[in-house]
Length: 320
Image 1 (tube, rainbow, N blue to C red):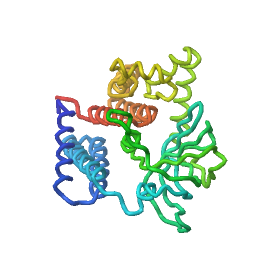
Image 2 (image 1 turned 90 degrees about the vertical axis):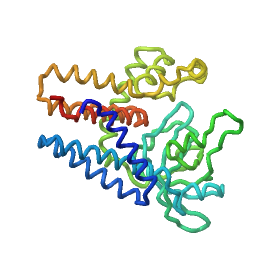
Image 3 (image 1 turned 120 degrees about the horizontal axis):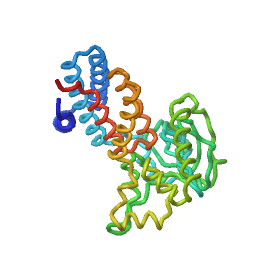
Image 4 (image 1 turned 60 degrees about the horizontal axis):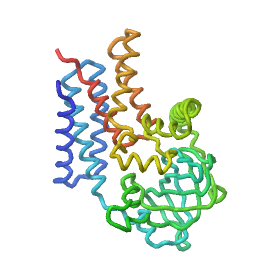
């Protein structure tokens, strides 16, 4: 297979067309994608190249159908966005589904809602909201289960043509509502997310180490820009510098993308070849490195796409 990216694109688009013209539930496509991916890995280990390629194609097809069905599906009747339009005080219970975004003056938490107290009724709910705390705090972590009370609002949309559309910005990140609280003391931690060791023990320490190297080697503004170049972390870049990148049409360099994944793959290949490991083990190490970098870059869509393509390319059997 000399052009794996082209084949992946064809089958992914085929999945989009399949979902558009059928009425199967999204979970059916997801189940097929998971089973096909597992089959592809098993066949690759057993060196059954033809079956492995067929399973990969089926997995890509099903993934395209699943994502299309997921994006086009209507919100259920208990989705948080339907309650946010009421602009009422509610008690929300949910799980933090990404690492806290801690800034100099505030903290943002992405919360997956599982229940809320609304008009003296306890209601099972779903969907994600963005919790803004008006102070920096490290009291909460990834996968913590929390409870808080506040006004649940819809994000504001653009007031003028061409202006920043906060609602669309959050919708792309699958966040449908916002809550603002003055401090962390208004939040109760119900369960700790310590059972999620991967992010806490690997990703967070590595990301903190990268940030510390930049902070000790460069002035604060340059360190913030370098974090943007490497892992797409633009939180600490000043508004003036951010505006200059935007005005010059170079804002894309602050977003981790396929180029970053390419640098990672090239660096890993160079390092792995020095040890002269068998091809199979080289591929495992390469996949692990790409996955870790994707998490370091906050699993931004551009990075995930490039990471998936890098993995698919490396899994392809060598040309004969």
